[in-house]
Image 1 (cartoon, rainbow, N blue to C red):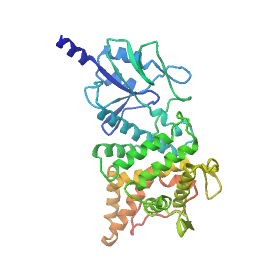
Image 2: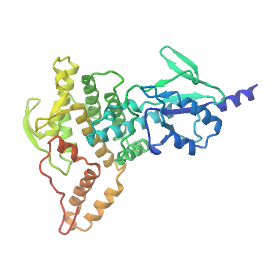
Image 3: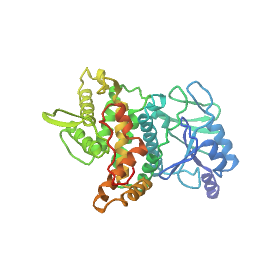
Image 4: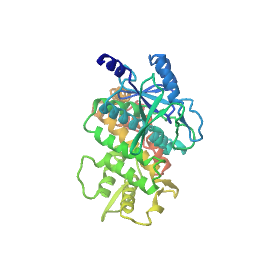
Length: 394
């Protein structure tokens, strides 16, 4: 009797799906592998009985118009594939999904792509299904109980209209940096980045029926987590502005336009980036304290008079902060460092360190197009080329 029970337990399997996400190729984030389902069928080394069940299960997922999905994404963590994993491992998957969501949405924002996928963190919803391939049932959690349904008699519709989202990962250095962070877990960045990406994901959801004001609060919380997680400060509006000044405006090889004004009753000359941070957090405070005018302030007015969503601007700024933080921890960018080092080695010894740092960050900014969104916001002064020695080239 005991032997029979053990055999049954060995047959229990588990699949993790992101049905609303369409991947073109396999991608690894940390220890988690994201597969196009069709590719997993070719390379997953799982027997036909299992795939017969999975084919019927994935067919339960439809778009919002009840059309079959031709492709979706399957996650694996450890071999052998499809074996049940514990809560700790499921949390690793959640962290990888958050990293992938952040990279995709913030890359879209930086590319100024005003399409459905920009605000669609819902495409990164993931589902766990335990199953026995010899059975034809699936378990569906419901509020207050768990339902068991026969395959073919249950369906799951996408929570949004439109096409499946295909993640924008052409700037995949961000994905590799986030993946390295999930493996190495440097204390200086891991906790604050992971907390911020959770708020970021909620701020770009469309299925939770959150107002734009609520999303501003979530993204302000995400930005605060990136900048102030390791500091206890009382005046957060001022602290966020000053950290943006230090971490981006002064650290960049490009120059921001500045403005002199009052910040928390002190006259200061700061970059337009820092003034945006102050305005954004001030808007957050107005919303949480019930200011009825807040709903009319969810857009940011650029120096040229154009209106841009605070949500788009926050995504761009957070992307810049995360890229610089991961780069400082040497979690990606070895080729950027090597190129800057080669160029600096040709300079006079007294200039090498300055030339190295200038070209290091110039090349980083070029690789990720960090200056482009700020140009669109009209925050930048005329281009400032990086320092070179005689005969040196960027």
